[in-house]
Image (cartoon, rainbow, N blue to C red):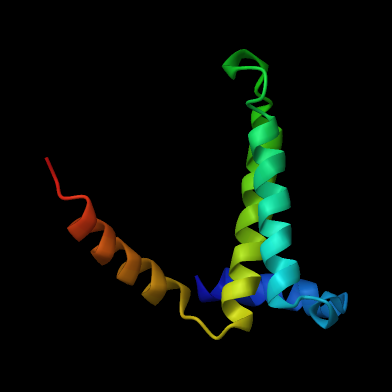
Length: 93
């Protein structure tokens, strides 16, 4: 996980995108990319472009990882914490 985080941040910083990557901009970008992902399903499953689905998922993850990094969050830790909360909220059947 740390390797891909470093690759994302290095890629971003070399392009100086970190200068505009404020929390509000990153949150907006996540929503925009998620909408582009959803667009693949707009006309039903028969029209899905799976190559584009992969690209849009990657975009959502890249922005989310950059956001978490900038906030100083440990991604693995916050995911585990959320899984614990979800396990309580949604117990096994």
